[in-house]
Length: 352
Image 1 (cartoon, rainbow, N blue to C red):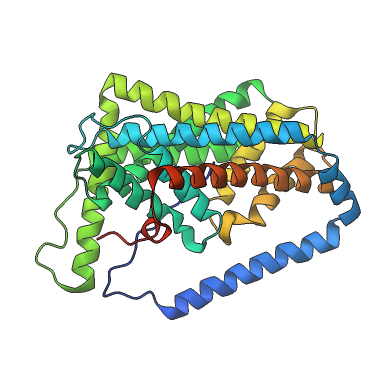
Image 2 (cartoon, one colour):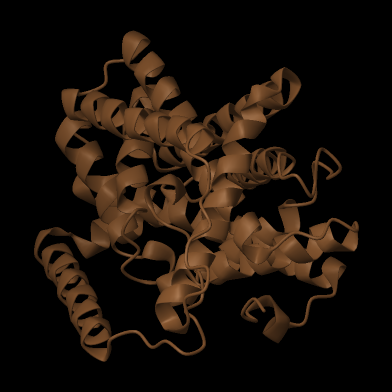
């Protein structure tokens, strides 16, 4: 699973009459190239490539396979969290099923592994709405996108609480505790605001791109609001919070299994907790498809600095963990595509 979903906004297609500033596109492309080039230069300078190859070749592949399975479980639990919040939409009102968002989430995660700008998030919204509409629950794309934002907020608030609890019993470094506190508190505050602040009818009567953008924003915020207010129902809140905690526990288990596979450290629980925290931050800025490069840096740096793991072993762990996540998402996404019968072009079709 992607652990930093909560820290980013949902990517929605731009209005048909709008165009993103080409200078902004070029600046962002240049920034990505510079960052990735810097990471590659640092890797070429610091890494012993033969030692890295030996660390990868000597990995326990049965543990790597178990890490991939744990990652898949994390994704399914994340889909359940999203579905529980989508149940709060007035048009849905508790009539969705626990598995309704599994296929949209897996297909979207698969696409995010290969496409830039998190275009897989658009597929999640399109396919999530498609699944609900099949049940006769006529919701808008913006409402579904809003519940996905709500899931990011709620799941990250739960993650912050779990990370702080882990800090009580595990020897986590100070920067990990502070990061968990800040991100978790911000997400908790965002969830509370979403539940309190009602959507307003923005952009009514306004033509052009500004009016369209305001109306889309208002409808999306309506989905965030309804999703957050779903937590007022005790049974639904328990379901959402339990699945939200489960997705992070499964992700933590995947990190521990990957650490054990490369023999990185004996302090598996603490190291996996710290890596989960740093990866949450790294996922907030997807520079390349699949976050290649920044994922490995976010996984390797804390292991080397805080746990004394050799750089090559730490990088091997980052590669192995990302491979486990990617393979589980791709395998699950392809199976869901086959079962759902979704043409590849439809998976990326812009909302109407």
